[in-house]
Amino acid sequence: MFERLGKNSEFQKVYKTGKSKANKYLVMVLVERESGPNRYGFSVSKKVGNSVVRHRVTRLLRESVRRNDARLERSYNIVIVARNTAKDKSFAEIDSAVCHLCKLHGILK
Image (cartoon, rainbow, N blue to C red; front, top):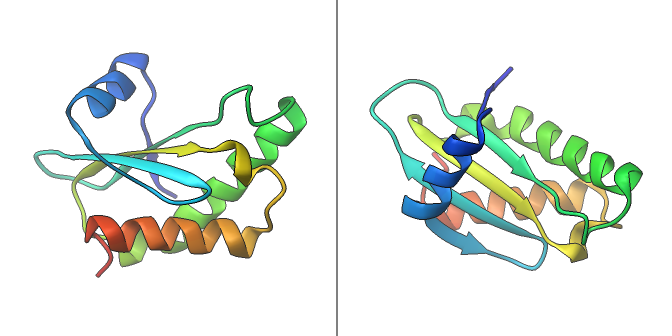
């Protein structure tokens, strides 16, 4: 399992001080921290769809992070924001988008 960002203040700190990269389906914001494992937060707004759609996208993101966490550099707080275009995509497309953003940020080993 991976660690999660929980509090709103943690999300805000990542948004304010982090570096942002985006692709067609997702936006990834990350900020380096002192030490420890990566911590992840997911944001899927109401613009993406109703609660069923939003939860499905969140589950896909969570599974993608769970599979790829071992391949990433350590000690980052990472927030992944789903764009409206992610709502009807398959797991393979979401997983590919997450890996692409990790490569853009240079945190893929």
